Amino acid sequence: MQTAPSFDTRAPTGATAPAPRRLVTDAPTRMFHWLFALSFAGAYLTAESEHWRLLHVTLGYSFAGLLVFRLLYGLLGPRQAGLGLLWRKLGAAPAWLRSLRAGGAVNWRQGQNLAMALAVVLMLALVVPLTLSGYATYQEWGDALGGDWLEDTHEFFANAFLIVVFAHLGLIALLSLLRRQNQALPMLTGRVPGSGPSPVRHNHAWLAALLLLAVLAFGAWQWVDSPRGLVPGLSSGSALHVDARGASDHDDD
Image (cartoon, rainbow, N blue to C red; front, side, top):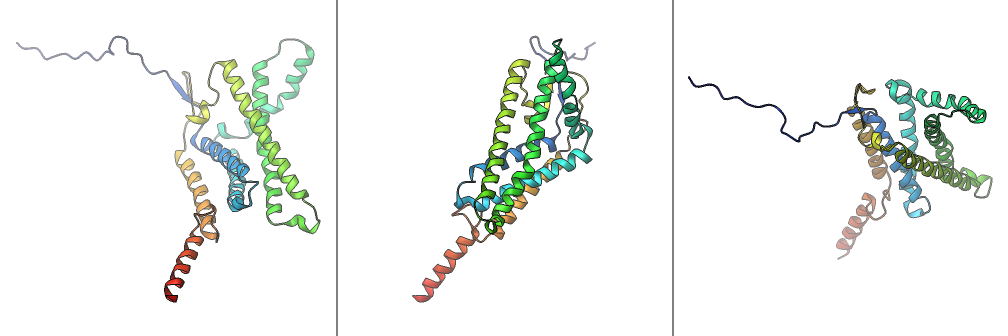
């Protein structure tokens, strides 16, 4: 009697199972983070050139709109994205500072988390005076009072924001070395190595896609609405002007 062939379903010798990972940051939070960073970087780099003024203003509006999204998502979104976590971390700062003065055992990991939370809160808070002073400068509200004080104010908050950004990046690099784990990973993949339940139950990728589309749609609307476009030399208005000029020259012939 012929027996049925058997199949060995065991993993081959030397093969290792993938390391477990947990989802700790959802897609909307990551999308906000990178759009927020790109908006500020683009606005800062185009701030000094009148040639790029409309692009600078558009990025500034996007910057402010992203803050509104983050606040709403922090209030109405899932618990792990709530801004209350930041406030609770900062609320523990007085007790942590007292432990420093007491001279006993100090929870340095808590201190590191406090520094990270403070940097994030400072960045979110600085968006308000930064964008308001930029809007007032764009509308030339300071001309009635004379001087360049509004532009100076806007530049001050922009530089303050940049300093906090560098401090934030420095903290991430330092903590990555101290903890021997990439602290930027949650904002790249949303996951960290480790077993156990994931604090994020739903990734909400659809909301991240909507946020990206909203920012792109706003930029496209600003581009079309502007007679000069956002990027010099690539505007639809200049193309129409060239076509009209060419048609006029042809009629003269």
